[in-house]
Length: 270
Image 1 (tube, one colour):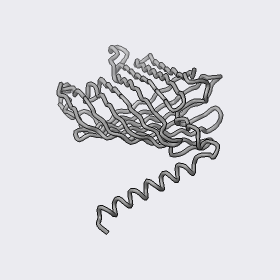
Image 2: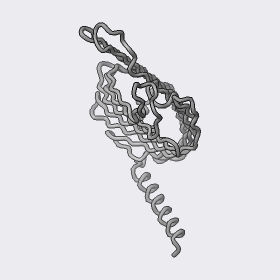
Image 3: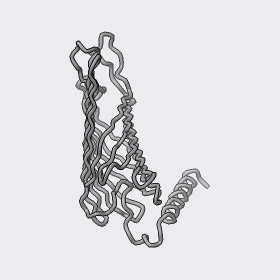
Image 4: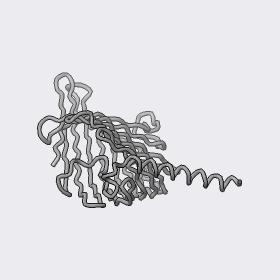
C-alpha cells in the first residue's frame, strides 16, 4: 500500500475511533439533545452573565496597588451559544515611600465567540480576540478564527472541551511595525467541580503563526461565599515566542517573552 493511502486510512481510523469515543460518553437520554458547553452555568434561561473584580493596596514603607476586572455575557439557545467577554489588570508600585507610584502592569482582553452545535459532542465556532499589554513587545494583537470543537469529556465532576481552528492575525509591535499573518488555533477548557461550592477552571489558548506564537494559560480556583457570589483566585501566564528589543532601557535588551500575574477577586453570577 502506498504511504499516502496508508496515511489516509490511519487518519480515517483515528477519526472513527474519536467519534465512537465521543458517542460512548453521551448518556442515552441525551443522544438527541444538545450538550452544554463546559463553562455553561446551570440552565436558568438563555441569558446569563457574570462580573468579577478585585482591588488590593498596601502602604507604609512602600506603596503598591493592584486592580482587576472581568465580565462575561452569554446567550445560549438551542444549538446556538454566543459569548462576549472582557478582562483588565492594572498594577502600580513605588520603590520607597518617598517615590511616586508607577504603573508596572496594564493588560486588557476583549473577545466574542459564537458556537453552533453540529452534533451532541461536536460544534463549529467563530471567534474574535483582542489583546493589549502596555508592557509587552506588542501594542495590540487581533485574532479572527473559525474551526470545530469537541466536547470530549462530560461527567458530574469533570468537563473538557477542545477546539481546533485557523484564521488570521493583525498585530502592531511597539516599534510601530505591523505583523499580519495566517494562524492556527488550539484552545482547551477544563472544569472540575470539586464540591457544591468549589470548582477549578483551566483555560489554554495557543495561537500560532509563522512570525509569532502567542500562548495564554489561565488557572482559577473558585469557592462559593454566599448565594451567587464566589471568591476567585486566578493565575495567568502569557508568552510570545517572538519579541523585539526594548530600546527604552538604559541597556537595550529583548522584551521578556513571558508575563504572569495573580489575581484575587469576587465574582457574581446572574
